[in-house]
Image 1 (cartoon, rainbow, N blue to C red):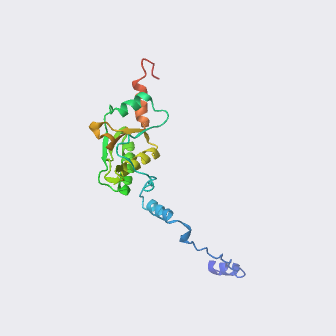
Image 2 (cartoon, rainbow, N blue to C red):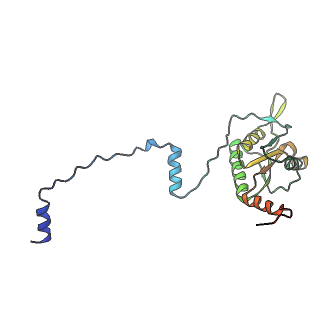
Length: 195
C-alpha cells in the first residue's frame, strides 16, 4: 500500500472544519487624519502637526510692547534679551504673509532653530497695515504673541530695540539644548574638581 492510499484510508471519516465568517474592515472607522497619518507612516514620511491656531486671535496696537517670560528664567537673562544684548542666531521676516502662511513659517522656524541648537532669534512681524477706527492694528503681531506662548521651546520674548525693528519685531529666547546645558556646567565649575 502506498503512502497516498494509507493517507486516504486514515482520512476517510474526517469532516472538514467549518470556517468562521470573515469580518470586513470598514475604512470609515478611522478619521481622515488617522488614515493620512498611517499613509505617511507607511511611506516613511514624518510630519509634525502644527498646533498653532490661525483664527480667533485679536490684533494688537502697532505700538504695543510684547513681553513674556516663563517661570525660572533669570532676570538678568531676560534683561539682556529685552535690551538686545544677545547675538541674533537667525531671523524670520513675516512681512506680506497671510496668517496661514505665517503660522507655518513660525512653527517651522522655531522647530528648525531648536533642532540646530540656536538660542536667540528675531522675528519681524511688522506693525500692520489695516486701520480700524483711526487706530493702526497689527494682525500678525497678535498672532505671533499668541503662538510663541504656545510653543514649549520658547522660554521668553520681548519686542525688539529700534535698531532691530522696534515694536514691529520680537526677540525670542529658546530653551537650551542638553549639550548647551552641559557646556555651561563645565564652563562655570569655578575651581570645582571634575569627576
